[in-house]
Amino acid sequence: MLFTRLFLTMGHQIITAMELRARLDNHDSLQLIDVRSAGEYAAGHVPHALNVPLEELEGRLMDFSSGPVAILCQSGARAQLACDILSQHHGDLLLVQGGTKSWIDSGGPVVSSTSSRWSLERQVRLGAGFLVLLGSVMTVTSAPGWVYLTMAIGAGLCFAGLTNICGMALLLAKLPWNRSAKSQGTASEVRSA
Image (spheres, rainbow, N blue to C red):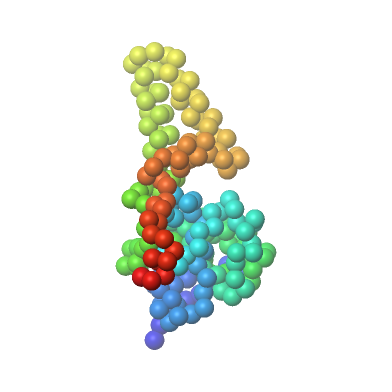
């Protein structure tokens, strides 16, 4: 028998990936919402999870069922924010502790529609870090003018933090490896399969 440990936190409950898996195996009526970016979602998500990126959450309240809703992201931080936002509109929220990473670590199946295994957020951190490092090294070894590259990246990160609009993420999302794979079959082929 599964002993489910649920914690009530600001109008929502916290469950582990294993508890989520047990509920899904028992065919519990449960809607899964993944609040990561479209690129992260395409790189790998829990089967049957609906992608509602965190920044679109309040505009898509009608996409949520009236029953229990499990919210997940990559590790749990964005899912916590989503639960805080949704708790005003929905009474039966479950925060999946550890998110998709915990789901994968527990051996849960993953649906992937792109070959990218790096989240968009991770790509932004790598890109910004590389540009800051490049600007710093070039400033010290070559020409002081390179410091402006470092300053521009810092300003861009501050802007992204204040407005939740990241120019680098928008550019990276357009790259081929961050786009979802398109289905090659027709609707009739999918139905007959």
